[in-house]
Image (cartoon, rainbow, N blue to C red):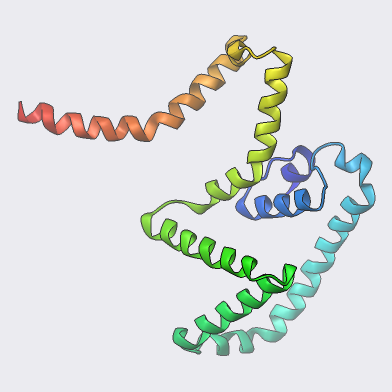
Length: 186
């Protein structure tokens, strides 16, 4: 949470969701958040302390209830959860569009899960996409449209090359997996 508040970089999928919530409310996480919105930041920190204490009390007193919920069959509890999610999505704007979006992204998430795609990178990409696009646009304005700014010195060039290698590593390993059996047959 600390890197998310101070630098605007989420360190976990949960922090990425929190970052998305802050951006929706018009708060830009980073060093200036502590200067411009100090009441919010310290209120957030205080609420986390209070939330931990209250959460501990609730968990310690409600463990038998939580254990009883685990005995409810999935065929009963799944539709109840789905209805609660649909009601929650509808109440945001009182529009069925939000319910359809919830269903579409739920099915998409289920498909990603079944196909083995990790969801945290997708959440990070959705949250950080706008910030990355703005930073790229700013770099292009500063360099007057030249991509050479991304290879201006050895450190920046090295990090950029490492990023490109990591981007294409799955493709490279897939291609080498195809080439090896063909070479062994020859």
